[in-house]
Length: 203
Image (cartoon, rainbow, N blue to C red; front, top):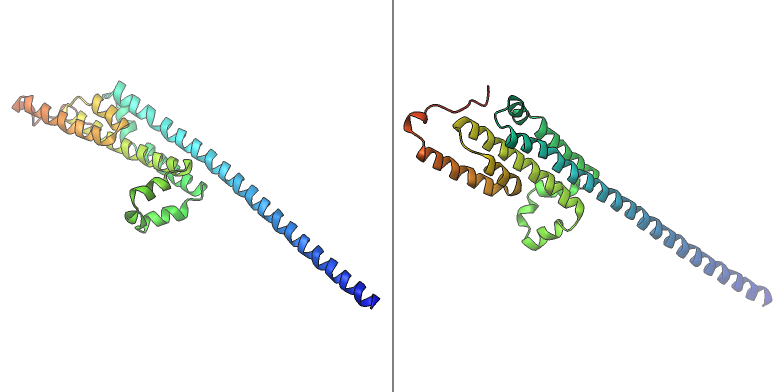
């Protein structure tokens, strides 16, 4: 009986020791996973900050030259060059891959975005990483639209400074402003000047 009792106590002690060891192992795994998740989150937020600032800084010189010296040859060379737009597109891809948003981007490309509601879309933009990705896209689209307004304004001799500013701040307003300005300029311009462009942007 003594041996059986001792064996049961030893078995019970080993069992409780095993349970405690397993619990401690699970706790360490959870802590390690949480720590790794926090590190990845901090890294993603840092990448988002860098990408957001880089996209904003990249477009400002292009807008500044279009506003300050629209007829300068270097301005036309910068605006017509694909470098600014390719650089922003590359920054967009790098940001999406770096923050681990490839799956989200794939979901958007497969059409799941069309089934989202306003509330669900707001939820997607609740984090800095998603905001940075959308911001780069907006900067790229706005700059490309400003390029069209700039070249069209030079070609037809239209005042375009206000439209470019609006395009940077709110792209749809810039498009509307340019269309109105172009219509007004055509209405008050002498008919003999309609067939002669003010400036060929390609020169």
